[in-house]
Image 1: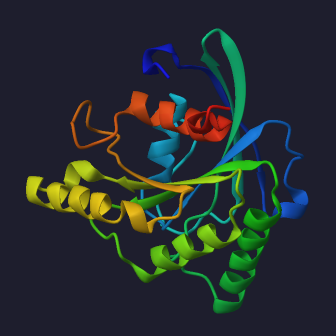
Image 2 (image 1 turned 90 degrees about the vertical axis):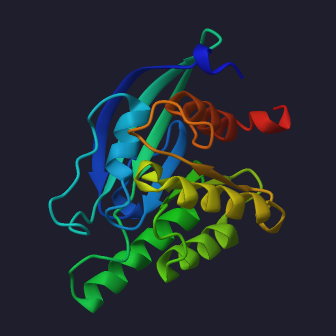
Length: 220
């Protein structure tokens, strides 16, 4: 897949939902973006969709809605509609335990039952890669994902790492490649870095997203 051939020509906010029951009926392949609060989900979505659609809250963990964004991609003259879904950040919300438990139950139900989900984008802060919350989320995604669904674990804010820290992260990812399930793949990313041989660029990230959403890595 030639990265230069991929264009995101349209992107719009669609709707917000509180749970799977009042979410819009799926009509396109869907990509869900999730991660701990303050991991950079809004920045990531805005960068990939080339438009300031997702909004960051001044209070991490405050947003409790599932936000849907429609987009139109063009590859080899083919128009490909994709829906991006931004889930509330987990692990930081300042809410009651009962509300938090109910909230997490709704999100789990959404992930498990939304059959149109083709790709899970699990964003992990590259400065804090082994938190218990992220480990739990990784295990959950690997447990509920089907054969036609893929997981991209994306290490964000890599521009904030020193060169030694970046090398260590890259080596850690390479050394654990064989331990990941076949449907899980890891990428290092920064929305603020144009080109870096150890980071995935925006163009490369779009190509990866399109590849795994459409199943092109298997020749489909």
